Image 1 (spheres, rainbow, N blue to C red):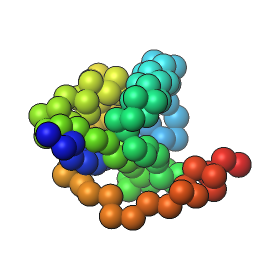
Image 2: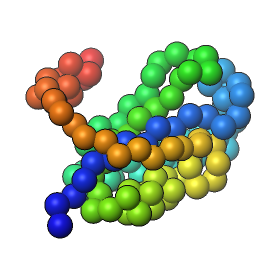
Image 3: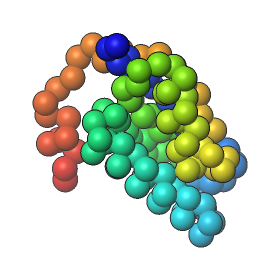
Image 4: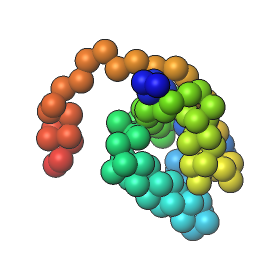
Length: 109
């Protein structure tokens, strides 16, 4: 079956997280980054990133490929930061309509 695309949105669970995270939270966020890096290298994650502000609208996005919504949900729920509740997450079906080859070149500063 052809894989579909999904987006999951993550945001800190704790108020004040973005202004000061604990060493425990930092360790989990580091695991979260390694998890997404591995999935990107496997071709599952297409794009991941976060907004750079610190108010309550701040969030991250992960766009990924999965064979089913169940598989996409499992990938999201196994994200270390989601699993332990540092981030809460919501899954949405998604479709990339346009993508620029420049996306990574422009972000490599």
